[in-house]
Amino acid sequence: NDLYAVVGHPVSHSKSPRIHSLFASQTGEPVEYTAIQAPLDGFAATVRQFFDRGGKGVNVTVPFKEQAWQLADRRTGRAEKAGAANTLYYDSEGLLTADNTDGCGLVRDLVGNHGVTLRGANILVLGAGGAVRGVIGPILAEQPAALTIANRTVARADALVDLFSDEAGDTVLTACGFEQPDQPFDVIINGTSASLQGDLPPLSANVIGTDTVVYDMMYSLQTTTFNQWALEQGATNVFDGLGMLVEQAAESFRVWRGVTPESATVIDTLRND
Ligand code: ATR
Image (cartoon, rainbow, N blue to C red; front, top):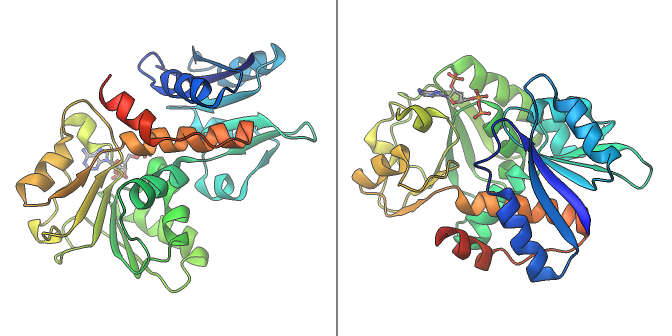
């Protein structure tokens, strides 16, 4: 079997081994996939060791995605701009290559699985950290009418607008604080880690209309704090990040194996685990 692994710290909670083993049995690809916890000061050594043992590919999770990006000899276009990588492999020329499939995963879940229209939409993205930086490029590629990045620290949202202005095309790309938006959006994507602390970005209830699609990039067994708030404001199209998790994995699998697994059944299986 060909060996793959997710490297993180902590990593025991990771669903990637489960997802990739479901992909492997579904496609018949000879893939064996494990989880490796790297010491906080030992990411590079852990990755090198894994490839030296014959490993074919690595997924990278918290807190090593920026280090994975640094470590690589070359980066795909989408990884370059994301500033972080979740997928590593050696290309045909023997160069350690960094890719980022997170944004692709988000867009496929929204558009493909949930039937959400991003083209021409008025989108609000909450947060301006690494997770959001990874998804802005793929969202802009869908050509929304407007993309507003709101963050607690407005300067970080401003910096993302500067970074992605060259990819905005006709999309009106702006930054602001949480308090400013006061009209309903077509789509609201929460990419803050506020939910982890049970916190809520201080948004106006006016950003939620009856047709607003609300997406929390976070996934947990219970409804996330943010989605709970959105439901209380009357939102009815509310999704969590499980589909994104499976779709980013599917895209990594495709990058490594050249085979695209079917993700809907895997999402269902995980939902019922
Ligand atoms: P990640 O890789 O998850 O994006 P990060 O780069 O540390 O991690 O970014 C965390 C994001 O969540 C940031 O947008 C952060 O806001 P700041 O830039 O102002 O720090 C946001 N965030 C974290 N805790 C938050 C909270 N309690 N309320 C609102 N936003 C929060």
